[in-house]
Image (cartoon, rainbow, N blue to C red):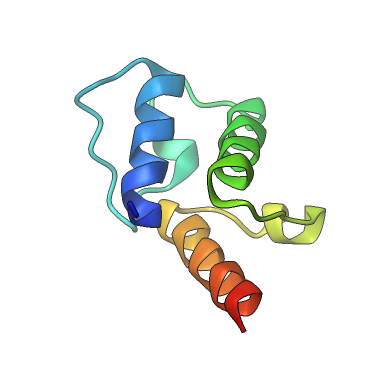
Length: 82
């Protein structure tokens, strides 16, 4: 199974139409070229679909970096498996 970072990278590359995009966990969403607030919603919804998880609005509001999202995915997967 692909890692959360790998999947987030794929989502971002598709969304931003940039096959060379190589975000790190420290990459801030707002620093990505042509980024807007609706892009975060799109990334979160796609991550929910790919990983079979759900985020609430409070969690989404705390997402500022790629690593934040990857970490939340790992946490939610661990909770679901417990």
